[in-house]
Amino acid sequence: MSAPPILGSGLGYRREFRAQLFENSGRVDFLEIIADHYFDASPERLAELDLLAAHFPIVAHGLDLSPGSAEGLDENYLGKLARLIERINPPWFSEHLCFTKADGVSIGHLAALPCTNAAIDAVARNVDALRARIKTPLLLENITTVVPVPGGRMDEPEFLSRVLERTGCGWLCDIANLHANLVNHGGDIEKDFERWPWDRLVQVHYAGGRWSGGVLIDSHDSATSEAVWALFERIAARTPIAAAVLERDERLPPFAELLAETDRARGVMRRSRGNARAARAESVPRPPARTALDDALQGLANTQAALARLFTDAGFRRGFFADPSQCPELEAIDSGAVERFADSLTAKRVLDARKQLPLTAAALGRDFAPLLRAVLRETPRPGRSHDDAAALALRLTADGGRGWIADLARYELALLEASRPGALFMARRFGWPPHRLAFAARSGAAEPARGASLGFWLRLSGGGKLRHWTL
Image (cartoon, rainbow, N blue to C red):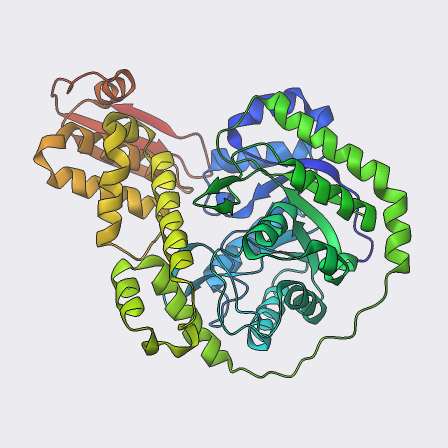
């Protein structure tokens, strides 16, 4: 990645603004897609991807590769990622420098690695395994550290630099994450600016966050702050940026506001490009990374397994903090930070389930979140968002007073299942006609009139259009 192509100023693609995107394609230089959204995708979703690729350069950004896992990469996930990269043929793709699973537990979010040589070795081994399957260059992204892991032998700039030197990866600098860590953990950007690996920089992310309980959260739900813009300008003046992506996931504003931010980023990059090249040429090379290990990979695996349960299992969390000596390497961990992170994971699961079951959420109103949280407490280890939605449907079915809403949840789950790729014929029985269920949910009406109904879904082999009817 010594001379990456200049892609310019782009957007993280979200389906909600697809129409406005094509109407304003001249103001968006490229798109970044979430790779995981296209694994096991329906033919309709893959056709959408092909349409995007026909009009914009595309790079892929992964969420759940877990390159820092001591137990290695998930071969099933890696295969799906390899097929996607082959399909879109991007100039590079990116992932987060983190772990998301350990000892059979999927955390459901990005968890920080301990800043140790063992963690560097784990990442390097996983990158080697990935390169055996995918030749496209990989960028690693710095994440927000909600829960610092005790026992680190280096700070974030040194750890990131050593990982990139050891693996040969490029850097995706998430400026909002860098700023949040500086604010939340008391870093000194003035003292440490030149210690970050700017000669590895290829792409940047920028986004808006929010404050919660005195902590700056990387929430991607507001406009980029002036503090992040100031850091963006300083970075652009220091080193050439090949690509900048605005991330916005929630509370999407009018599309014109997103375009204004991408225009501003493009202007910063253009004004700084000449100065940045000079600054990079004058930079002083860092000494090579040490490769000797002072921690065993098994020790890292044990630590990650304990962290995964701390983040996802309230019962385990209570027992641990009652007697932290059971896991000495984590005795110094911040209990408040762990609780905040665990709560944010639950909130994310609720949000994801709401997206899976929008009509059910509308029908339940304010009861949706507390009811799902109660279900999640009984099933602490997170799976896919579809699993959470299915667990809620089972709870609603067991609750005799919510019969029609349970039927509505089952109908929405059937729609999701029918959207999966491949030849398909599926039939489901319902106690209420689905169109009445949908109307009641959207209108806020009382329980609709009963009436047994059958739903049918059919997709012919070869990826034809999904057909659906009810009787």
